[in-house]
Image (tube, rainbow, N blue to C red; front, side, top):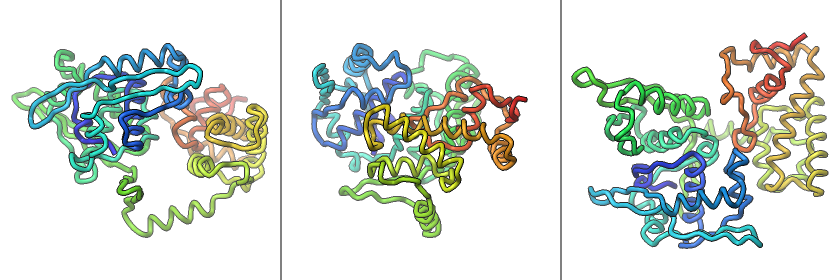
Length: 373
C-alpha cells in the first residue's frame, strides 16, 4: 500500500535504487517499526546485475538512499528528507539493519489517512526502466476510477526532477515517455496509449489512455480483499487453481507451491514431455543444494532450470506437429531487440512465450519461430 504522497513526491532514483527503496517501504509498513532487518540474500533477489550484489555495491546503494533527497508536498509546500535515516551491515549474520525517521514511518504506516495505491511488487520489481517504475505509480494512482489520465508536461518533469533537461519535447518523448510506456505494455498487465495536448502549438500536457489489467489487493486489519469484477471471474480463477496438476506436491513448501501454480499455469504436467522436464529440473535443483525440498531459497533456480528443460524437451520432440503448432501459436512475428529477449526467470510468470524466446536465444529457432534445418 503505497502512500499517494510518495507517488506524487519528487525524486530521482536508478532502477535498482528504486527497487530497494520500495522493498524497504514494504518492510517498514509490514513491521510498523522504525527499524527493520533485511538479509543480503533478500536484497540480491532484487538485483539483476551481479555488479550490484556484493556488500560493497549494496552499501553504495544504501548510502545513496541515506544521502539522497526525496521532496514531499505537505499542505501545498515542498519539504525534503532522505529516503532512509540510518543503515548498518552485520557481516557475520549477513543482515542489514535499516532505520527510518518518525515522519516517514508515520507516512508509511498511516497510508489510509493520506490516501494510497496498491502496488504489485512482482510487476514493479520486473521493470528495468526507472521511468517505467515512476509511470507505473503515477498511472496506477488513478486507474481504479478513470481510464483517461492527464498530466501536464511541467508536472511530469517536476516529479521526475527533469525540469532542466529535455528542453525539446521530442527528446523528452523519445527518451522518457515512449520507453516507459512500451515496457509497461510488455508486462501484459497494462494496455496504455497516449496523445499530446497542445496549447499555442506546443505540447502542454499528455493524456494517457490506460487499461489496468492487474487486480488490486487491499490490506485492512490483516485481511486481504481481492477486488474481482464478477463472481464468474472469481469462480474461473478458483477452478483453474484446482485443476492445475503438479506431478509431486510434497517437494514444495506452501509458499513455493503457490508460486509454481502461478508461474507454470500454462503447462499441462499430465503430459509426458512436461513431466520429464519437471523430474529433471527437480533432480538438478535438489542435488545442487543438497536438500529434499523446494523452498524460497532454491525456487528461482528450480524455476529457471525447469524452463530450460521444457525448452530442451520441445527440441527433442521437434518432429511432433503439436509442439510446432504451439510454437507458431505463441510466436510474435515482430523482431525482438536484446533487452526484450532477456528473460527474468525470477519475476515474471513463465509462459510458452518465455520458452519460445529461450529457444531463440539458443539459436535453435529463427525469427519466424521455425527450427533451423
